[in-house]
Length: 218
Length: 330
Image (cartoon, rainbow over all chains, first blue to last red; front, side, top):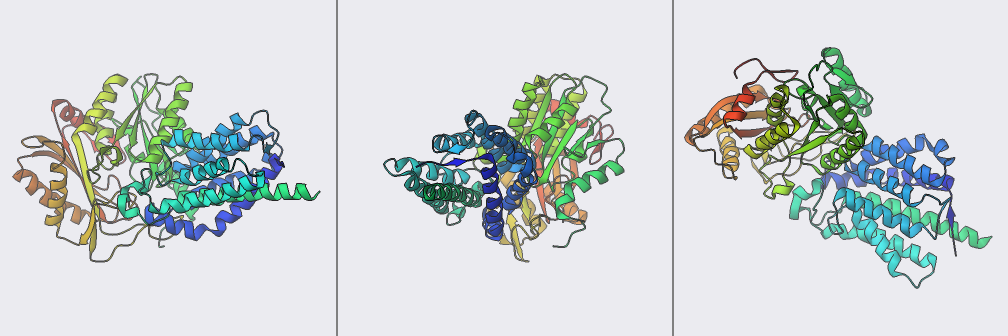
């Protein structure tokens, strides 16, 4: 069982994710208004718009260069915490993917772990801090725990983990970002940054699962 | 949402264009959201500050003689990105190092730190001073930077203008941070143009004590009190922190958050002054007005700086910026 996500297919994933984020705009903003100042979705989405504006050029680039360009567009187009964290994560992945022509079963785990480590390092953030990292971390841990399963099992576990990591932020006390000023009063509220991370990761897993299934039917 | 704007996406750019027209002596890089001085002839240490927009006149209003060399604006309430900050650092660089004045928010700290790394790659020496004057947060590491930051601009700015080295300006900036404490309260919410609705709700008869300048929750929400009672809350919170102000000369900022008229700010000045006298403090200067706002939020923050000989001398030095002019002895 294997898959190959080419740069052009990665951009297709990005376009689909932008649509999913937009569909969830009001709910994410509502969550963010409870713990932050309600602009997380506006900021993150503006980064997606910057990437989509360049989609035709990005499709033509080698994978690593495409990741670097996406990272720079998000880093310079979003601002705030999420712009820096997502932007740096993509740029770090550009390094880890240099030499690969596609995102595939051999480099996928390393790709996600690189993102995780970069966000940890740049944000000085750990699992349990009630941030975007909780969804990403749980997705990767679940993927790794499914070591005896098929690639599809692992990706399903990844998806479930991403969502569970988001749900788990509900009972956490925020340690980073504006949420931390709510301290224990934030318990019971889901983290908006973890939700947008979950939406992106679940769609990434779905994109890969569809790709594997279409390969199997050939 | 009721705002005098053209499009929510363009508020920062259009604001900067207006600032450029109204203040011909300031230079503006609209692409990078940087307001900077281009009249610096000396090799002074550069001073840079920045952060989300929506706190005007902070920080672009403090660019000019005796204060900042460059200010970088992000989107409303969101830090500018590291590359924009790097452009600001380059404008502020006069070959003797650049001090970055950073308010203690996750986004600002991350973006300024990365910008400092980028500046190092470009062979520009930088230092960072983190401002965390808001005593409403008990955990020191989480304390936010609010209006006390203006004292850092003023005093470190004077030190740089006098030709002090990067080490010295950094030490003086940290001295200000060590001696200034602030806290505020809010009566109303505010609306980020791109979001379109208020960032929180608060009843007509309530006040949130200790609220931050982005609507971050404060210490508690209570029934609206008189100016005297609010003054007493603010002064007591500041004085019960770790600085002993007794018998000391102090400088005070009574800062409006954007929606509170000068009439009310001056009533607060009187009430604060009575309390400072009771506590044997010697206020030598009041700054009264909108120094660091939160869009149209109604509310006030109080900042008290304990002065020593050096800080007082530097505070007395002249400065000439859009938002603060001091021409001789204050």
